[in-house]
Length: 151
Image 1 (tube, one colour):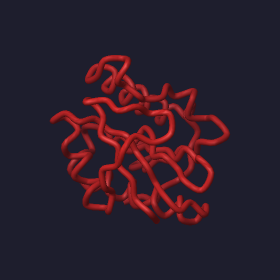
Image 2 (cartoon, helix red, strand yellow; image 1 turned 90 degrees about the vertical axis):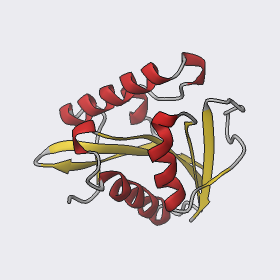
Image 3 (cartoon, one colour; image 1 turned 45 degrees about the vertical axis):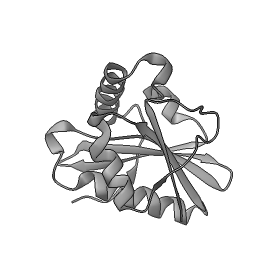
């Protein structure tokens, strides 16, 4: 399995996977409850985008949005055809390690509350994330689950 690498949102394989992620998230939640970022927003100065590649193709992506000494995990997604092979865990552990190397002391994330996000919530929980109140600009929403972890 590949290591986590920094990527640009406009790399063709990354862009294709980010589009799949964006379209899926928009299909699962109403716009007012969907916090997925479009691919071009992931090239912002406060965001670092990462990917795992297999055979020169992105199979998982995720980003860190820095907020002072904290960061938010954004756009974490594994290609449907690559699921069940451990990529999401490798990606999450790589994001945690990258955050630690950057001096981040706390990671936060927002994910969906529905059944389609149950596996993601279980993964986050297994890596030490716990539910918390909304952070940053988020507001309480029954379709969102907010999680945090000190690192």
